[in-house]
Image (cartoon, rainbow, N blue to C red):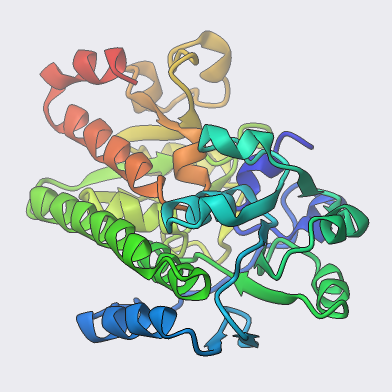
Length: 333
């Protein structure tokens, strides 16, 4: 269970419910795609350079006001740590959550939060002037206690792919690293646009995405991973399910017969191991070894590396479209 928490920031699980039920506490939000235009980018940049007080509204709808850009930052989830580094504010980090292992510099920082909550005393020792929290994953009671000490808390929630560059820009504004944050945001957006263009008009591939193994879990259309699948020309076979993350029936999976099975994994995991095929009896994609690992931290942490995971999804779907690519994709997973 403790090891599961390292990835839950990409799945939408509330930490307080994970302790009771592995798959409980799901958030559901369809959201609306956020487009960050040049005017907004310029506003962020000049506001951060002005030296004036900074006021923003976080993803919980709360107003966050800093008298000056943050100089001591703590993050309460691994994906947030990655976002802060990508926004150019890594040198300002003084504390992080457990499992904040990317980039490597994060490993040496004090850890003040994990699946069980926030270690308040350890956090206060680091004297942060800004705490960046995970809206649906950190206890609101913990965040209120942090605020009671006069510390500003920005609650972030990445629900859609476009929320990544939006959050990067917000962090850049709060930390006076707007230019670096803008650069990272534009790279992410450029890579997203390139994938969309490259896969527009390609034959649709039906996909089953395995979020969890025991029990077998998957996602509906409102999860960012499903958005990534669609960007690559894939169709989530359980897109119409009413729950964000759920256990599908075996009968439905056999009936739907996805053309490919994707799942979080690593280069060290053999996608064709017999024990990993358990539960896929009667699924042609499994019998024909159309099962691909997608780097777990990239695809399950909805941060700046999420686009790397989506790129792997696109490569897997292209391999299914062009069988001669299958061996190449497997060798490079």
